Image (cartoon, rainbow, N blue to C red; front, side, top):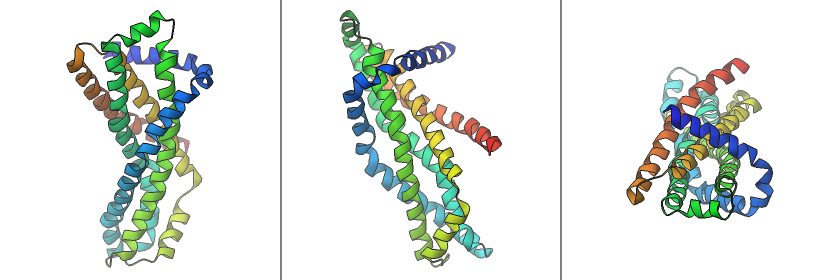
Length: 247
């Protein structure tokens, strides 16, 4: 475990050192942005719509029984901004994109394409890891913004058309406006950026350290997704504690 942590931190350092070279790799960054962001947008919006709807469906009747229906917009809004949108989008990207990164780099490692790059004096970190890490760090916060907005919309639809809640669109969005501050959205974006770095580093690290042929590629993909999700949940707790103290 300590060896893996050290290797990941070293990969982070070497990638950060290569950041000034990002402009040279802009075409690869744009390709990765399309794969991570545009190709994942529909799935992210669909997931967020039902997350917001389920949240309103579960909390709305309980609030209505206690005469607190006017707070449903605040509950859905804060939950989506601070926790659900960043965490769920990060897990979605870890499963969809993190596995792809690990498989692609793992196959290049197994079939000695990484060694071929080194033999041509091409830095694999700058050529392969940097574009992926930059792209996922830019794409995930944007996906989280869409997730928050669609989640709010899903909560509004369920709140209005559920007879147990019986609140108007105006009442829902007034509650949302009164309960949500810009700092709540910023906190969610900050978390998503941290999660993106974790996903990119873990997935690329697993890919670059793949051994054992096709079976080894499968193990690397599984470890990349599992480790990313575990680290996302652990990091979410500590970031939440930190942001609560800063607020």
